[in-house]
Amino acid sequence: MSANNVFVSYKYHDSDVKQLGNYATTVRDYVDYLERMFDRSEKVYCRGEEDGNDLSELTEDTIRQILSDKIFYTTVTVVLMSPNMYDRSLPENKQWSGAFRSQEDLCDADRRSVGRPIGTVRSFTDGWSPKTPVPTSLTDTLDGLTPSDVLFVRRYFEDLEHLFVSLKGVMRADTSACFFVGNAQMDGVTVRVDEVIPEIVGRAGLRVEDVTKVRVRDARRDLEDYRIDVSRVAG
Image 1 (cartoon, rainbow, N blue to C red):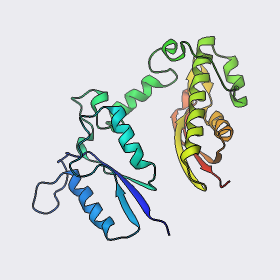
Image 2: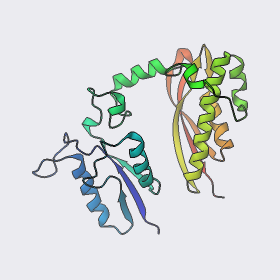
Image 3: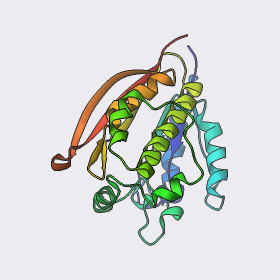
């Protein structure tokens, strides 16, 4: 049996956590505990930041490169959630992870981003032209959009297709992944993300195992969220 490589993601210096024993405790102490547990097994290896390896002063691109090299060969990711992962006094680009927000902030971002890109369409499409065929499931939708919105939607799905192609390149045979996506409206036209993604997943050489509706975000505007499970088959 091959060894399991476990990647542990955490906020190094967060001390707002339950104490382990009679000493000041940070999240790193929990990682040390996990590593001791892993060391008892010959089949489990822990990958991630080493003790004393503070990455906070490095650029985001450098951190991404360092950690991606560690993540690549792992089979399990453990995320240790701690209270100070999100600091309201800091801008988004200084956060440990922008993914951890209050429910209020998430709902506000959801309302502001539904149906329109964040920023201007022009900044997203200037100088860009499509390089892949229009997905068949998207044809009727594009007929109802303005030329600038057509370019935006085309680029959105073309970027996603590149993502799935890259994903196939790193997924092992007989493994799977899941994505959470939501459809949207642009100028009253519904973009059926849940129908288009299965098509471009297939074009990328992956297989859709299941599409499940997980939430109705806005019934009046026909906005819903979906879980899409994809796999890479052997061969």
